[in-house]
Image (cartoon, rainbow, N blue to C red; front, side, top):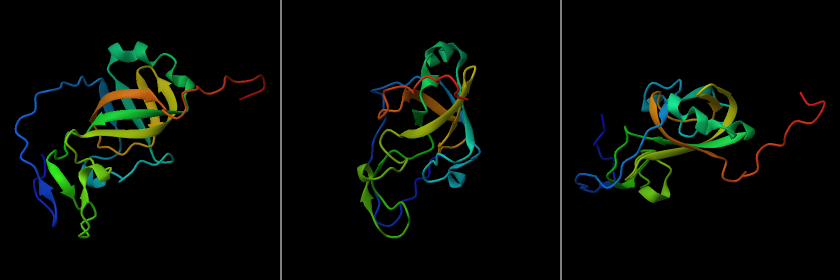
Length: 159
C-alpha cells in the first residue's frame, strides 16, 4: 500500500491515471528485506547475497553476462509514491526536489543498482549490492555501463 502522508515541506502533484507506457517484468528479485523499513538506503557491494530469478524463457539472454564482474539491475519500485515534487527524505526539515534525490519516490519508480555478480545458477543470478524489498519485479539487466569490456579470460595458472 502506498503511503500518502506528506512530511513538512513536501509537495505532491495530482497525476491522474497513467497509461502511456507498458513494462514487461522479466523476473523477481529476492532479498533478505521483507519491507521498505528494513531495506538499506543504498546497496553495499559487501552486503548480503541476493538472488535475481529470471523468468525461464529469458535464460538464453544471459549468454555472455558471466564475463562481467558487475552489472546494472533495473527494477520496479511499485510500493513507492509517484506524485511528490519535493521530498524531505531524512525527516530533518531539509527539502529537495525529487530529481535531486535517489529516493524511490519518483514519477516512474524505477530503481537501479550496480551489483557485484557472484555467479549464475541456471536462470538465477547471485549478486551483492541490492537495496530493494523481497519480491521486487525485475525490469532489466545490463553490463556495468563503465566497464563495457568483459573480465579478462583466465590465464594458465589462474584459479
